[in-house]
Length: 379
Ligand code: 13P
Ligand code: SF4
Image (cartoon, rainbow, N blue to C red; front, top):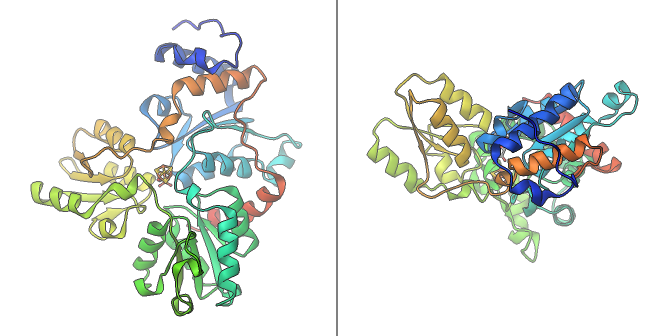
């Protein structure tokens, strides 16, 4: 395919929106050839197929963090995912030992569309977390509480966790992270995803009545009594994923009735009522591996983001794969990353006029790194 001459001015995103996918692909590939191993395109499993096809590496949040942390030759990361993932990549790729190896040269991390956020991450702001921590300190000894933040959170929350002896977890190491925390303190404060926290802790035997839900908009103690807080083992933040909360127990029941023998496979961000009914659960990486390992003819109803389930369906015609919900559950913010934004941001990068650069400030990065390194050690 021939490579068209660059659009001038390079910064005009609108001009890219009218190009065909073939042309956009050609432009993206031209930048990939020009930058060679200095450019790493990372893609989360929820990205649309056209984007996945152009990614150098794909993975779940844990794997993508490992990839960013391990990057050697690359000087630029284009993160096809959401904002907190790009922040994490910036922190890990530019940690002090990596900067020293590169004589101080930073890896530039770009997020092709700055509007690609995570609605769950937005449900916990740093001032709310700090206020909750201060309120808890009036009732319990917070030196006996380990804060655990799901990686789906702003870097400021990860820094809070790092400063306060806590750890970052992902959906693939949440149990190990809670074990790590319980080896240190009697209690855990888990944010922002109540479902991942509850599902994981329940699996470890923590009873529901020892897991109060902290509502940041409640007047006092997150809507709890002092007694509830005193009895708590895991204080859950009232946050959730708007995509995964759409999966309902009645969807599981309908599939089981219509397709005897079907297996239900869900992401742990699903509500407890669904998670408990599932045969298997895990991160997006584990969901993929589970399907890959299953024999032909296996029937699945999968409860996670639509693009990933549709891709699994295409890749595994030897199995019968269904989407667990009758309604469309897709991550609208992940979907914002398209070929037009990718081509626009990459051509700007190649032209020396980078756009949408994600750079976490030094102090926040330093403390976030403490909590992220613990995450990478715990699996
Ligand atoms: P994974 O770490 O399982 O890929 O999950 C990321 C995410 O945002 C799920 O909603
Ligand atoms: Fe956030 Fe949910 Fe989208 Fe994952 S699927 S990025 S948790 S909104």
